[in-house]
Length: 390
Image (cartoon, rainbow, N blue to C red; front, side):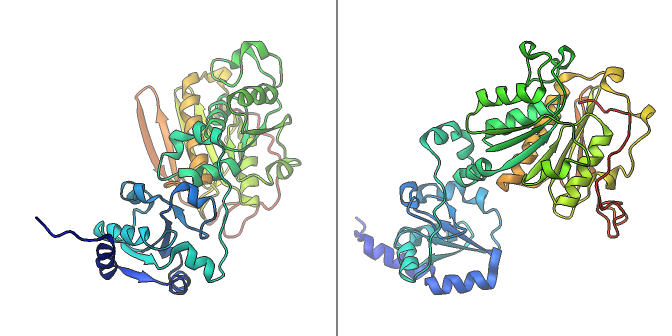
């Protein structure tokens, strides 16, 4: 029979094999390495309610090995782990070392941090109802509670409550985006209902933003819907856009599309683009991370004869669902800080041939609005009598 070992002996051996840092050394490491240091709080959820070190990822000890690779895929940096007093985090650091991470244990944990006079952050906790409602999202290690809180704090503006705006707004509301702005001056028409799933027959003739607010309110009472029952113009765009984190372009005409692009560039707001026609659609992200804007790809609006409306060309309603949902995903990723965005890429969808394609788009240094010497510095209304369908 193998000789028994006390926990204290085992802990001593673990600590002899790992690297440990004091609170002061941790702060120096953070100052020197910056973003290359990932801080992980491995305490249980009820402990975290009393405060966390600013910038820490909350990953309970029991979930560490299961979720660490999704949360910290890059093993090049330093992972500093802490708990209440430094015991559980020592075991966690040893486990992370076996997984190939450069892991260090923070001696004394939160108690040592507080004893050194450093403050703790107290992130807003989700209610029991919210924990239940968003449970499947929160379970995603890339999102977690912190990501869900970012969604609830986010402000996303959807321009157009039609074919693209309908699925985008529905999924943004379902995901828990806390504030949704909706811009549309149109009324619901029977011919809209084949693709504009925010609305129903009972609201035909009513303003789309009113119908949308009612539908989204029934879907998720967490969401504050701000309706703008007005046509977007150069005069009101700044007033409407300011204060929003992301703009989702669900519009049906090139004039408004160019106005949205220019406003997003001038205000520094990411622009989630979508467009559809017949059996085809496209989506991208403009005005983000020094990437291109819409004008880098399409410098000028096309002539009306080359841009038939959906009345003239027709559109399969479900195509709006595909592209509008892609737009919702991009907006969610942006505000929650997830994954790689569509900035610099245009995704096109050919429904008849069941094919997605990707086109790389580069920022144009000579672009009229986002280039090195921009010529457009004020918003303009574009009198273009053409419509690319919602």
